[in-house]
Length: 262
Image (cartoon, rainbow, N blue to C red; front, side, top):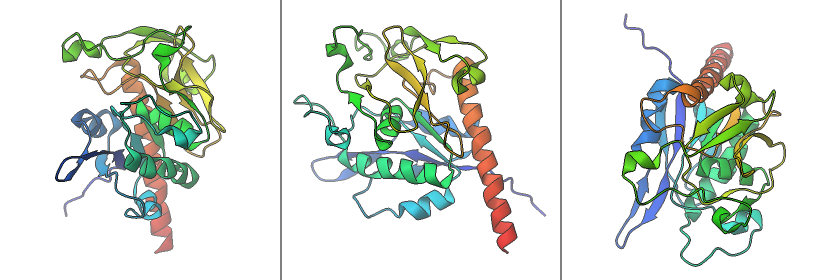
């Protein structure tokens, strides 16, 4: 008899793009390919549909992890009581409408969560935090945006150091208190949300990683892009592996509950 291995099902958030004639759901392949390895799961793309089209409670009941992807778009500022965006800022209200409530439901249900770039901002806003909309306009901060004058592979080069919180979850995963990371973002965390703990900061004080220690499962997000370049190595690999371990633990618990119910 063929034995099929049980792998955790990882929800991967997508973006909504509105064309002239039709809509598109889009997620960069790099967020999907990191799920089989090093996370060790099966990717399930979660579309950014209109409000009410997705049963989020049912979705949360069937996934073992939630991966919040990066995106060119920014969270609409009304979600964190921020001032109006500068004209021309790219937004994705459908994605906001899915990810923000989904994050809260996932944490409540004990589903592990890992956020990347826009994902760290979504996690913070979902828990009541606020954002800097344009870090590069702040006098005491440097420009964290992606360089557009270099080839693709160099956009993800190490850009600056981060310093991790002593004794924090990220420092324990890393086995050190500093690391070099890439930088491709315009927004960043201003005030942390309820229960959100800062795990790392850049040299200018911008928050680079957060966690939610009070959650019943692994909940962490980083401002940089650990999914690229490949092969994924060092701290980036350790983060994905820690997330994967938590997702497998959730799967085992879910299967145990299902077996007990039968």
